[in-house]
Amino acid sequence: MNKYVERLYNGIIKENPTFVLMLGMCPTLAVTTSAMNGLGMGLTTTVVLVMSNLIISALRKMIPDKVRIPAFIVIVASLVTVVELILEANLPSLYETLGIYIPLIVVNCIILGRAEAFASKNSIGLSIFDGIGMGLGFTVGLTCIGIFREWIGNGTIFSLKLSPESYEPISIFVLAPGAFFVLAMLTALQNKLKLKSATNGEGAKSNIACGGNCSTCSGSDCAINRELLEKEKENR
Amino acid sequence: MKELMIILIGAALVNNVVLSQFLGLCPFLGVSKKIETAAGMGAAVIFVITISSLIASLIYKFILQPLHLEYLQTIVFILVIAALVQFVEIMLKKTSPGLYQALGVYLPLITTNCAVLGVALLNVQKDYGILASVVNGFGTAIGFTIAIVIMAGIRERIEGNDIPKAFRGSPIILITAGLMAIAFFGFAGLL
Picture (cartoon, rainbow over the protein chains, first blue to last red):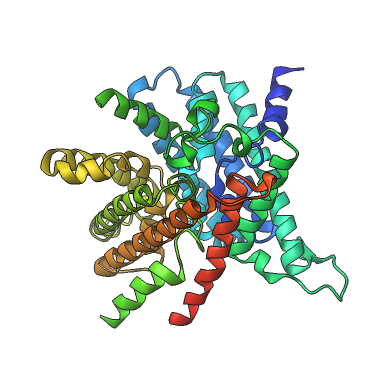
């Protein structure tokens, strides 16, 4: 398989950030109240991810190793600001509904994770395709969850009425608890079918954020966490 | 005074940061195995969020706004928070080793907690003054602590239960979080 196509396949199917890596859970739960919001958030994140992979990959030989995480954060934060201003000018309704979750893309694990695990080590072309693949994988994940919640909770999909008149929407599914329930069912299903996923690997060994499952996450989980922990160990 | 109370209760209970805004989910799910560690994490979060919302609102009011640089808020806030956490850690280590012993492990983990940045941004979005920002930050952190300690208590109980096989691990925790979110709806009547 062509290595560029392989990157797309890896992002969308093999290491899907929502279903397999379980990254970026905050926006996944918060904005998927409708399919449209999920799609909007996914595409916004994709744009930021592709741009940040491009810039970080282009600068990978210039950024000193010791300050690379702060450098990545500045790059990502600048890109997020640009995207935020563009959205505010051109898609004000989406900007309103996504609200605070747009600037919070900065702290989305997927973006720093890909920067650390892929873009800082690979060529520009490959990094762009990795960004597109991962971004589309995230978009697919969010849209699927959005479609499900909107359908059950509101009887519509992309605001189109798709359920019979007699269907009484279970409105809790578009509220906060519904997000937890949908994700719980998803992970339970993955456990049942023994699908490859971050949640049914080895149990977490320590009490650190993201379950402390750093040994099995191949460095794509919160890169900062791991680094700080290693530093902690040295200091002790 | 009444307004500040409303902000405090609203941030802590009605709009709970984890259960209704989904910020800070990683530590909520990751560090909630034992009540003690959950309380430690909660204390560290209270400490950091209160200080960071003070600093962030000071910077916004006295530097960004007068210079019309509001659009730089995301970049400035994230850098300030990252530096602040490091600074607090060094300060604690030097000045009060006891507190450092208790909170030290959790401090580095907070840099990546999206609740800290989220509160700073929400304060700006809601146009809070400096005092109101600090109260809102404190209330949000209290809400986080309440949620994570309750979660840890429930999880300690769940350990001994006979859970259906597919639901062991994270699914049952997420369902618990969902039920807690329903319970927290009850607080909406408070305001």
